[in-house]
Length: 120
Image 1 (spheres, rainbow, N blue to C red):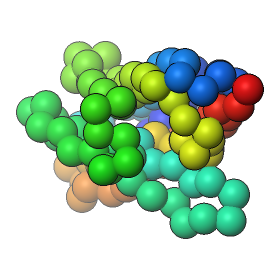
Image 2: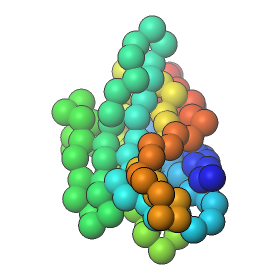
Image 3: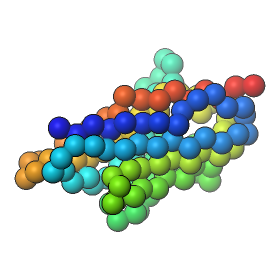
Image 4: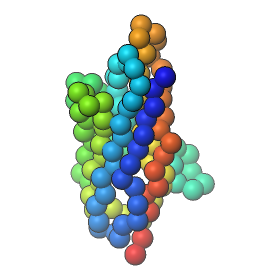
């Protein structure tokens, strides 16, 4: 089994910054694409940013130029640097990863979520 644990959420004023981190733990696993999703109250979960094992990235249009996703393959971590935050960025942010355990198939894993609130 693999666990994804997020950290770094909180309350920030509009225009501020936050950095989210996610660490994967377990044994005998390989991580492929990783990403961040978010879900605001009353809305569907949406993709925010994704990064491949090789470092290729893509972002939701709403966060381009403000958010930066990065990963450390040696440490099995992924981070999301969020700048120029807006109230509409308020949501629960979830870490996501495609993981193969041992010789098994790739499966999709989710973290437990971390709350980000942008408010004055």
